[in-house]
Image 1 (cartoon, rainbow, N blue to C red):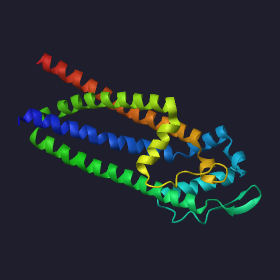
Image 2 (cartoon, helix red, strand yellow):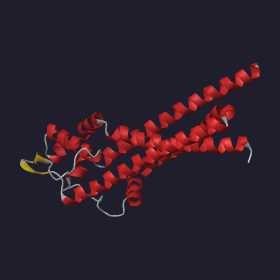
Image 3 (cartoon, one colour):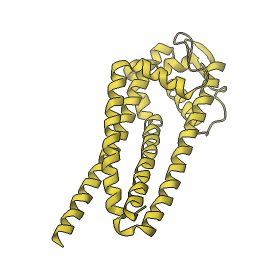
Image 4 (cartoon, rainbow, N blue to C red):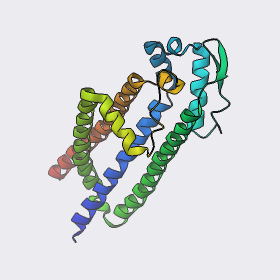
Length: 235
């Protein structure tokens, strides 16, 4: 295998590994954005739907996020006044589902961590053995892979626009091996807090963040490729 081909393969791998990093980071930016929850709760009139005060709704939400971050050990001690009744907010089914959600977030952050490690190792390889062609090959690989990812993001956006419920259910069937996620909007506070309309906005924002980051990488790659081409011509 020639050096040029080997370098191209490695740079493509680096680019492909960057996208899980961008995706997981985009998901975290939305998931842990408190202002996003506040805006959505106002838009969907969530507090009225549940029968809870806005301050208690926010407190419960921040506790829920702390649980996902592993800063809180359990959800069983979360209580609030709901429709005039001081009670435990989440039932056993909701709590069991959040164990699965927390595990999924941990899996995603592990994938990101391993991706970053692999990127660093591969960068060291190309800088050691293919230094002269590494930067240009990396820029070109970014252009190709980013173009493909932007097209896929556009397709995904169109799909969720056409039938979000179907693809949201499909996501759950793929990533969860039980039916704990099938919550009752009439009785389960969890789904009342974050109904389908909430997740539609969240997924749309994740796609926006991911696509924006990908486009920025592509633009940087374009500028670098053009500038190096002009330098080559000048010399």
